[in-house]
Every structure is written in structure tokens, then in C-alpha cells.
Length: 122
Image 1 (cartoon, one colour):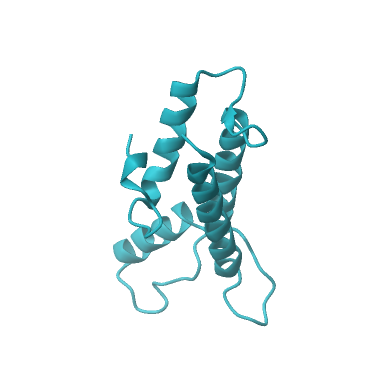
Image 2: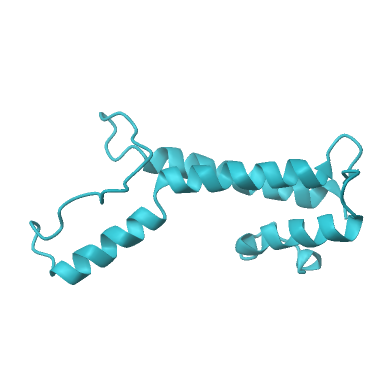
């Protein structure tokens, strides 16, 4: 495995981080709020059926910018633990096969990206 997969993962994580930062700011003139844990709006007041409003707000909460930012940071720390970028080789505490398997799986959510290589399939 080469640093190409690492570079691919880092680029996707940078994109995820940027999208979360943008998503945290609902309106250009408002400060960014990285968490929608309480739901973004009272959709019932906007005429939504209560169950649909609750499901939508649950969805937004699950994928809100704060959660995405935490996930990006966690994935970056996994990459740093597994791969020594300077030497383009697994870190000393892990076997090459283990590092490769984990990193390939971290790339799976991005398999539809045009830069994803089929050779990275686990």
C-alpha cells in the first residue's frame, strides 16, 4: 500500500470538515453553530406532521456538523496511529496487514468518489 490511499483519505476528510463548517452556518450573517442537537427548527409549527418532524430532526441531529467534525478528527487520529507518513509505512506497533485493512475500510464510504481506486477494496 502506498501513501496514495492516505492522501485520498485526508482529502476526503478535509472535504467533510469543510462541508461541516459550512453546514454549521445556516445563514451567512449568523455565527456558525456546529451542533443542531436540539433540532434545527420547530417543524410542527411549519405544518409538518409531528412524527415526520421528529424523524427529520433526529436525522439532522445524527448527521449534524458537530458530529461530523468529531468523526473527522477520530478518523485522522486513526490514520496517524496506523501510518507513518514520513516513511510511508505502518507504525511500529501494528502489522502492515492490519494497518492496510483498517485504512481500506476507512475509505469505503468514499468508494463512489472518482478518485477512489478499486484496488483499495478490502
